[in-house]
Amino acid sequence: MFDNGGFYSNNFGQDTGSSRWSNNNNNNQGGNHYNQQQMRRSKVFTPVTLRMVYMAQPRPDDVCEFDGDPISDVILVGRLLRLIEEPMRTQFEINDTTGSYHVLFYHKSENQVPTALRTFDYERFSYVKLFGNIRVFKDDRVIIGTYIKRVDKLEEITNHFLSVFVAHQIRKKGVLKARELAMDVGNTALDANPNAMTMVSSDARPAPKRPYQQPQLGEDQLRDTVVGVMREFLRGKKFVSKEEIHSMVQQCSMGQLEGLLARMKEDGSVAEAHDGNHFFLVGD
Image 1 (tube, one colour):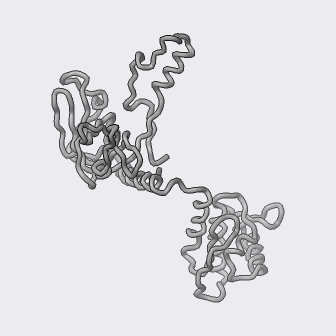
Image 2: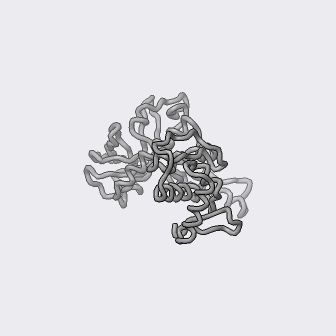
Image 3: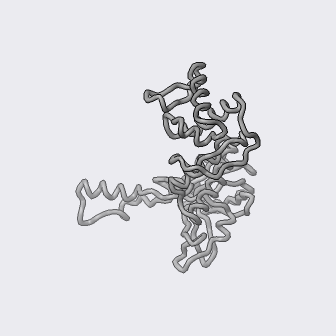
């Protein structure tokens, strides 16, 4: 799901007029190349909901803030309710289930279709993905559209709202560190087997044990548990050691685990590394 859940673009909303970036004191090729790079510098479009636009607070410099961070270039996904055509602008009313808002596309001249709309076919109640800029005019927030496209797959809608959630969590709590991500690895292991024990990270420090429902596991249960543990460890590396497996499956002794691994090796379920202490699953 989600850099901040943002979208990188090299063209949206950029002023391509060469006079803006011209350098009167440097007309050589190197200067022109620098100017072209400046014109193409990227913007980060942040996924938002219309309710977030409503709640954004205008600052004295006419920039909106949400949760203390400025938001300007945004992505919206919603359903088109109506189209309003005017001589110098086109308006779309869009609803994303959190609210309704008008998005404006301005024309360069009277009755001239904006570039962003030339390949777009309006259909009422269809879903669209829209890129735009939030502008402030006399304390009123206005969304100026820069690009719009039809949403063909419903997964795009789900992905957008997931991106909104992730971007919001990053603004509020910051980016998760590698250690914090590793702490959650063990929590997803062996959920189907309540007798198993999980790890908090790959450095082999155990989390609190889950309560046992049985004092011992049968052969088939133990085999399934070991396979589940190995799959979890092997997500981030090639081999898993006997000690790592045993630290998570303490319902059996090390001798029982070694015997099971030997039988699994014989039937081709696992293979042994060169040191005789590390194993990997065959066929996964």
